Length: 370
Image (cartoon, rainbow, N blue to C red; front, side):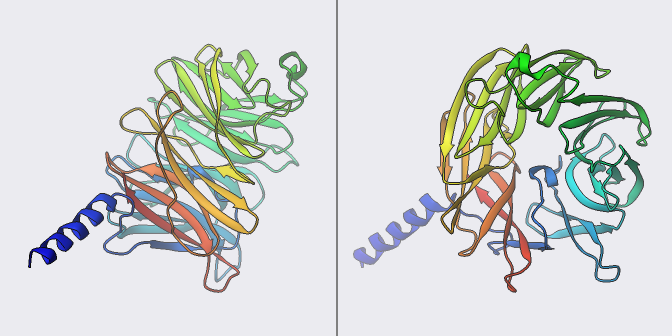
């Protein structure tokens, strides 16, 4: 009898020690979000609200019009669908964030390849929609931030090394626009051949545009100084960037070649350190997220000779690994798009995996405890 007792205790201890590796939504390992035929989903296309609602933006073909348009779905902490909507005016939604009134603002690209903003309320009901046309070049919204006065700052990429920073009023009407481009900035002076801007932050009445360089502007978008972000790595700089700020320091995560780099610089642009924190065969990173304990979490996908591996890591402010694990979401192709913290112990990730028909991509939510 005592042997069964020890065996039972051993089993309980085993599962107890490993229960933080995987967690489920209502006893389901994954929550199906929907299908998409295209890959250009961005890390900022998932958001966790103040009350732990999970909001996902993705695109798919409309069955009636056969046009690509965005879907927005909201789930509770347990993965139950709360609300959903579809907007045919927006083709891609690249960033969603919460607004001062508890609603949401989405930025991306419309059918005419122009940057746009969509404002919805806390129940995902449409409130207003605005587009921003910058001529013949394709343009799309990268990120949007609302200030305390209800105005919006929108970063737009024209895909020709030409970027726009807009300030709008509370209903999306343009107040001013500033341009930052390779041909108007003296890039050779900071040892760069091209300009890439991938994100921006606002702190202490300054705007910081982040990419392969850091550009500080005043609150009207006027350049005060700019510096190369990743010296001694590449003349082109990193491919993609995600930024977080803690106190007077900026933490920038970026992918270049086979490595993921984390860069820590002061708010004055002085580089404190630059670390290669992960290498792979052909690796891409998600957003870097600030956690409740003022550390960071991010995820990567490594495309390695027909094998696709995802990895999630938590780092401290020195760039050292706190924990690291490889979730097994699907035994086929999987790509991690975004990761967010739900509360102190739980995180949620948005994955793209091969669908049942092997043609479309299936989006799933995956919650885990650490």
